[in-house]
Every structure is written in C-alpha cells, then in structure tokens.
Length: 176
Ligand code: PRP
Image 1 (cartoon, rainbow, N blue to C red):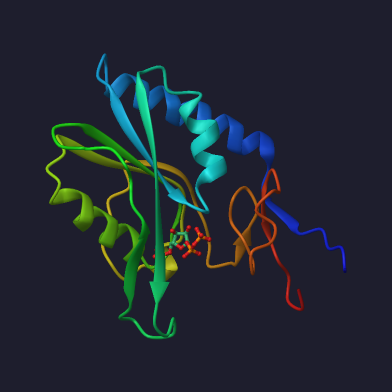
Image 2: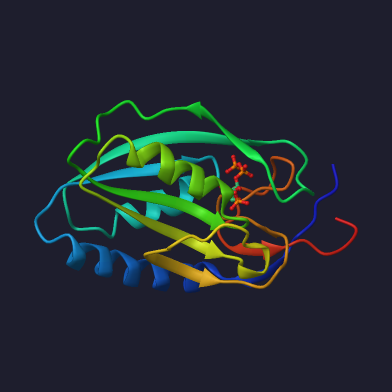
C-alpha cells in the first residue's frame, strides 16, 4: 500500500495548547457541577479523549453515532441516529464533543435530539469549524480552530476510513 505523509495544518503541540485552554474554560464554567460528556463517533474520539483529561470536574462519558444520508452535493440532507447514548440526560449539564462543524447538519440534528430529553444545559465543543461550508447556524461554545475550506484528516478525522490515528491535523494534497 502507498505510504503518504500529509501536510501538517495544525501540529500536535498546537492542538495540545488549545485543548489546555479549552479544558480550563470548561472547568471554570461548570464550577462544581457534574457534566455528561457526549462524544460524537467516530471523528471526535481523540479530541474527546484528550479534552476530558483537562476538565477538572466530575464527568459521565457517553458515546453517540450519527450518519449522514443522501446526496452530499445537495444542501438538504438527513442524519440518522446509528447508536444512542445509554444514560438519561434530563436535568443534566451536557457537553457535546465534535471533531468538526462543516455544514452544521450533524450538530443541528443532534441538538434537536438532545433538547427533547430536557437537559439542564447543552453546550458544544468542536475542535474545528469550517465556516465556508456552513448551511445551518450552530453555536460553538468551545472552539479549537477555525479553518479554511480544505479537506482535513488526522487526529480523529478520516479520508475513506484512514488517517484517524495521526496525532496532528493534516491536509491531503490533490492526487491523494
Ligand atoms: C463528520 C464529523 C462530524 C460531521 C460534520 O462525521 O465527524 O460529525 O461529519 O459535518 P456536518 O457539519 O456537515 O454535518 P462523519 O459523518 O464523516 O462520520 P465520522 O465522524 O464517523 O467520520
């Protein structure tokens, strides 16, 4: 198999520094309250793993999986809940952790799913935000990095299932 090293867009060190800052902000915002952290699979697994280590508050960790359907070239699409969380979030402080907000459809759908379960609060942490592709308005409470309209991989993000294990955010050049 061809081995290809992607160009680094955001280094491991830059990610770690930003996560330290986000962890401090979340810790301050929640005082002594417990948090239900919802990791959106698969892309957010690495960001979630590193971020929760920097949140000095009691946490219950949940996982959820959503999948997009339909023709991605169309502005309308639908998102299906593939795997739900197992815990009850009624009256709880919820922190959703995403790897990227692109069109915003996934997070819009997830917010709708969560809001009917009557949590006390719902906030969003996203490592990346790509404003060029946004079609649904989304409030990101804790943002890692705003990026240009490039296809990014690594640190949880994939291209055809690959590259999730890279410790940095990279860009695939044309032809790869
Ligand atoms: C990616 C990413 C977000 C979503 C963002 O998930 O992890 O969940 O797309 O895109 P949107 O803002 O346009 O909805 P993907 O469907 O690729 O699944 P994965 O996380 O399992 O790779």
